[in-house]
Length: 109
Image (tube, rainbow, N blue to C red; front, side):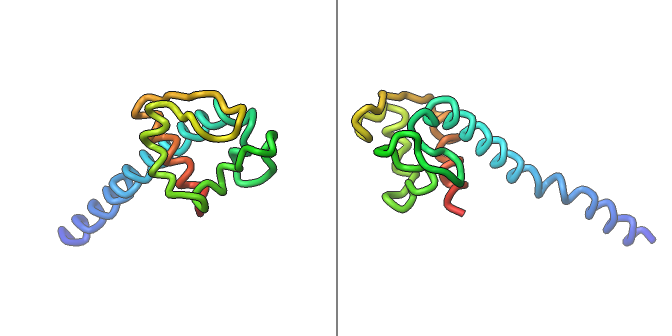
């Protein structure tokens, strides 16, 4: 009986442990999506579907086909100065950079 109780207690404790990192990842992805919609959706398609409002601005779901999105970290932190001709310069803090990259990574699926 003690063994069964120990197994049940362990099984009940397991889901929160498994949800922790995934939950943190999901929150980061949501934060990145909010940043993308707030700062980028005027020109870029930031979701899984649809065309970019500005034809020259690539949809975010396609960025990973052009280069590893992880490589955008430095540019996002220091200010993106390249891109489409009318792209404003953005600078994000380190947490925002990680959130935006997490969101871009989520679009690769």
